[in-house]
Each structure stands twice: as C-alpha cells, then as structure tokens.
Length: 478
Ligand SMILES: [Zn+2]
Image (cartoon, rainbow, N blue to C red):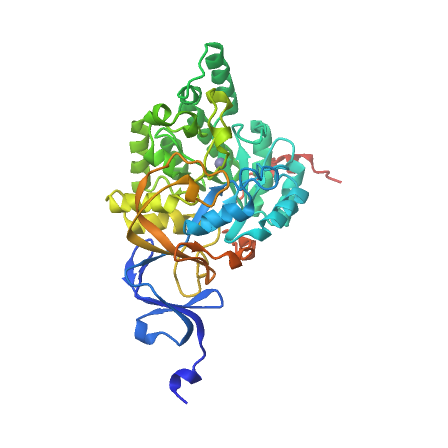
C-alpha cells in the first residue's frame, strides 16, 4: 500500500492558479474539503484528492459578495426570481448576495421574511436577506432580527415597490431598536421630499425627456440624506451603509462621519463608474436608475473615492425589469434600475486590464470589505485556510462582449449591451461546489445556496444614549 492511499483524500485540489487577496498575488495550490479551504501550499505538498482542477493561467479570487441585489420574488417574478437571479450571480463570479426587501409582500414582517426564505431555497449561491425598516413596521423589527435577517434596508427615497420613506422620527426609533443587534442598516440615501418637489415642478414645466430624471435628483438629494442618516447613526450607535453612491458630493459627509467615529460604510456601482450624462442621450430611458447616473466630474470623484478608501465597496444594485418596463417614452413612466450581478466582474476586470484599478483593490472592494462590513470575514471574503471555498476562478485575458440575450436574468435588458470586456470568470465555486463550470451553469446545484445567518458574527454593538430611546422613555417604572 502506498503512502498516498493511507492518507485521507480531500474533495478537490486546484493547481496551477494564482491566488489573489486584498494585499497579495501568490501562485499556489489550494485544497478544499467539506466546503472549506484546508490547505494552501506548493502543489507537491497537496494531499491526495478525489478531484483535480488545472487552473494554469487563471487567477483565484474570493467570490464577489454583492451587498445589493433585487431578485423580485415574491411578487414580481416576471422580472426575476431566486433561481434566475442566483444563476446570474453564479455566472458572474458572485458567491454571496444580500437581497433587498422591496418585494411583494415587502420583507417587513416575520411572516414575509419566512416567505422570502422559502423563495430563496432555489438559490445557487449563498445569501443574506434584508429586512425593511419603514414607518409602519417598527414593532416588527425585533421579530425580523430573531427571524434571521442579515441587515436592514431603509428607503429614504421612494423607489420600485412604492414603499413610502419613513419620517426622520421613525428612522431614529428604528435605529434605536436595531442598534443593540449590531446589524448594519443600509440606506437608499435620497431624500424623498426634495425629489417629489422637484419632479412635480419639472412635470409642470413640461419636462418628460430622459435627462429630466437627473434634473429631479441633483446631488443635494443624496448629500442631505447621507448627512442626516450619519447624524442619526452617530446619536444611536447604529451601524449604517450608504448604498449606490452616485456623486462626488456625498463623499464629504461620508468621510466626515468616518472621522467622527460613525460605523459607516459606502458602496458605488459599475454604472456610476462607467457612464456619464451622455447616457441619457445615447440610451434614453434605459439608463433611468435611482440615484441617477451623473456628469463626468462625479464619475471622476467616485474613482478617486475608491482609490483613497472613502468608498468601501462595489455592489451592483441588480434591479431587473422587462424591456417593455424600461423603454417607455415618458421618462417618469420608465421603471428604475437594470441588471448587474452577472456583468460586474467582467466590467471591472476590464478596468483592471485598462490599468484603472489593481486586482488586489478589486478583491478588497468586492469581497473583503463587504465580508467585513456584514460580519462574514474571514469565513467569506478571503481565501484562507478555514474560509468557505467561495472562489471565482477568472481568466484575466479572456475577451467577451456583453449581450443581454446571453444573461441568466429574466429581465435582462442592459445598458452595457455590446460592451467589450477583458477578463471573465470561468468557474465559480460556492463552499467547494462548482455552481458554474467552464462558463456553464451547474443546474444540479440549484438550491445549494445557504443563508449567511449561520456564520454571521457582527462585532459587539456600541449603543449610545440607551436612556433616551423611545423604549426607555415609555417603559413603565412600577
Ligand atoms: Zn437597490
């Protein structure tokens, strides 16, 4: 009997590839067993394995963690569902998604959360579920926490699903209730009243052209909301995350809040990094998204914000609609948002090829930082011994052209149609299992995805002014 036969076999050994972290690029072999990484070393030191993958010429990245997707189920499955949405994620090298609560019913009660968990049983990739923080569901927030939400979402501006934005009073009480859980509250930081006022004035003046959407939502809409949310977070000790940063102006309140010690993170999205105001002329209502794509100076500021660390992560705001819902003549009638979870990686790897971003920064922005912000690090967001084997195996040289018809999403019309890309995920593994292999979805892995609730560990909360909360002020003393 040989030595190799006496050793226990691991599930999978990948050789020939180059591992990328947020700070290093290292040629190494990697061994995976039971869904976890069990060894990283020279190929000669690898244990015997039941399966081998030759990744010569490829790079192994921690799978992307997309903190911002809308999979539309329950309620709007003609746009997307959990099977098509997570299939798109798998094809895009995304191994964990955080899914938004503006479904029907909205994820605003423990019952609706249970319904969302049931829909998510079809998932190909791991997921966290957002619970809603709204004006009228404050009494359900504890139940949502107990039910296993991974984070909360607060719409400061109205968006798809017609969920009214909460008053500042309700937001403050919501922050008070959520702060002791340590969970992060993600904000659609656009102030509803400013937008509603401007939109009504624009419509009254006869504006129905695509760029009127930008005129209704200048950067002050976001600046006011980010600043106000940061003040509430500072007061209560709640953790917050600013979704889809679209303007250079938001970076100042974000930076200042960080300097004041607020636990605040921020994301931007590929469309804000790759489109400018010309998109309204070139793409019409297809580019309509909240917040809006803005002028080139904002795009430049966002790139600078990524480089200097003010912006923590890249997410996609994957928000599918049908072509009919996107392409309406009146800009105010076109649905907002578009797909993105499948195209983020090829688009951003193309920026690496163009010399605009380093691959280690890319790993930080798409994997390590979101894992840290949402309490998943180092189980996710890194390729370390003991980490989940969530891996995007990419060919940095592979050229590709984006076509909506090839995407797995149901509502797959995209403003990135015909974009040439350089760099493509070839295989995607979630906890050691291929969910995409050689650019093919592994359909047998439908339902493989798990809630990140089992591993989420947020740092201890730092609640402030507990004696001044609504709960403290209304508690009976005898
Ligand atoms: Zn969104």
